[in-house]
Amino acid sequence: MSRARNRRRSCWPAYWPGYWLALGLTLSACGPPRPVQRAGWTGDAAPVSLDGLLHTDANHLQQLTDLTAEVDFLLHKVGSASGSILYQPPALLRLDVRGPLFQRVLSAVLDGDRLLALADSRLYDMPASNGLDAFIDIDLAGYDPRLALLGVLAPTGAIEAIDYPRVDRAWLTLNDGIQNQRRRLLVDLHRGFVEREDLIDDQGQTRWSRKMSGWRRMGDTGLYLPTKIRIESRGHVLELDYGDVHINKGLQRATFFSGIGTP
Image 1 (cartoon, rainbow, N blue to C red):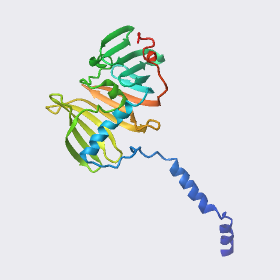
Image 2: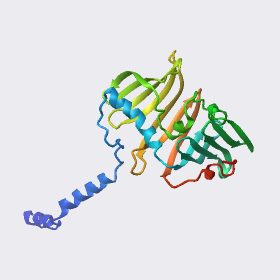
Image 3: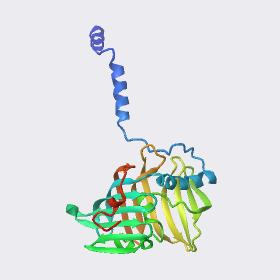
């Protein structure tokens, strides 16, 4: 009996343990990717480090020549839609939203202080300070819609207070110098990203909030953008789910106004 058992054992290849090790390593390599961490971020929660974090993406965004992104949207009153966003620093952005069968829902160009929009077969020309509230039902209360849609923090604001709900998170309260309002930011101290931004009034009521996740680095630049953004305002929701993003492709100014108006 023992001889038969030994013969059966000898039938296993000598490399069998190595096979299982290689298989285990392969399966582990195919698991979910590790969350992105900002390059050079040390997790330092000192105010000076956090202040630098609040400005870095806005600064790197302005160093691009242009950006093109595919986006899936979820809009109040419209539902699911597809589209794209074009951006050219410092203040030129085009937003296209298409419904079923690629029917145009909205094409809008923010050009400095001007908003040019095509919706419901009508052309609108108005101050950019009106934001996109009239078209996407989100009141940003004066926040730059270009930064809001791209997932970049407005760089203004001094840190008034820092609270630590847990060891890897920090709530920052910012004073932008605007009467009766503050911003609150939830920072992931391990990875170096802002997960949530709230605009609140002096009574502590939230005027709008923005959640961001799925960060990725744009090429070899120092810019990181989220793949998922959820903005809530007055019970209305706008969600953006970014697909492919291309940078520095040499977009011409005329491209932003194609089919809408004159540059």
